[in-house]
Image (cartoon, rainbow, N blue to C red):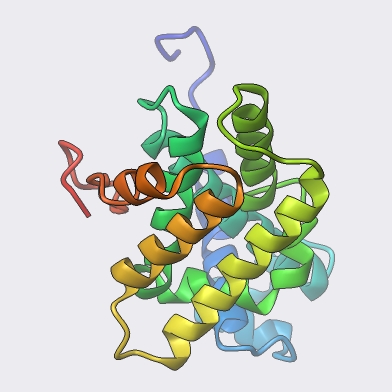
Length: 220
């Protein structure tokens, strides 16, 4: 039993979870490379699992790819929640999330490619980045930090900026990703109603690392 009184997973359950995770990682690799026409056999070979194991977890290749996108979204969204948990100001929560997401494209290029290749679907998804951005914009508006007349239109602009920034950073490896992400965030804050001086100051504040394994909140 665990400390919370929950039953610990059995060896068989751990093995099944490991197999499923391997399939999802393999699918994310193919998605990142833009290869969705691969046969299931190639996916299982990349995951180093047996062909029969695939159907213990997924009914089809399409279902696996959907799970791969959703889990990529959930992982990044959970990371943003973790890295903004110490902030009370919803305007800064939004800014930190956007600045960190901008840095994601260079630090986690495989995840970045998954997000960019499914950009339009991600904008309207109820998982991952989009619902959190909407939540933060609405919270900042309620607190009087943002001036937003139409949340849907604000989300359209924010999502477009996020996706285009990511593509630019992939296309222009010579660009400084941190500087570009901070500048776009500053411009968005001004658009959303934050004064120019404060937007500039917020976007110069230190950031926690995107690496979960790094302790102590080192600046990014």
